[in-house]
Length: 96
Image 1 (spheres, rainbow, N blue to C red):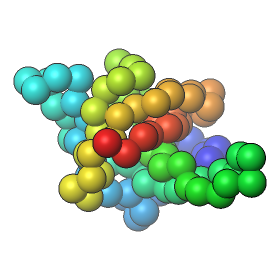
Image 2: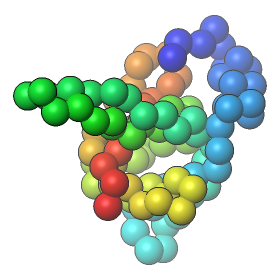
Image 3: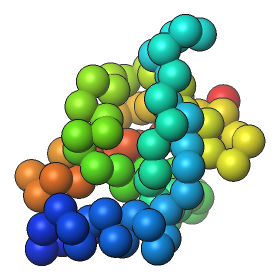
């Protein structure tokens, strides 16, 4: 999800994003705007989807594997953090 600049990214998040909660523990919660997506995956002839969050890298700079995320009332764990080098970080999620 490469974008030209930070203004474009903010506009895209404003148009397509939703507010999600990122938690490191019960006391450290942040509300950010991110784009929720589901990636099609297939392994050993079993198909499914993998939930993803496209975020501004500055919003999730200290998010690590195992942190909690809530999207539209559904709880997830961060399984992996992938920075794309353009200011966007993808959080690969696992539903709890």
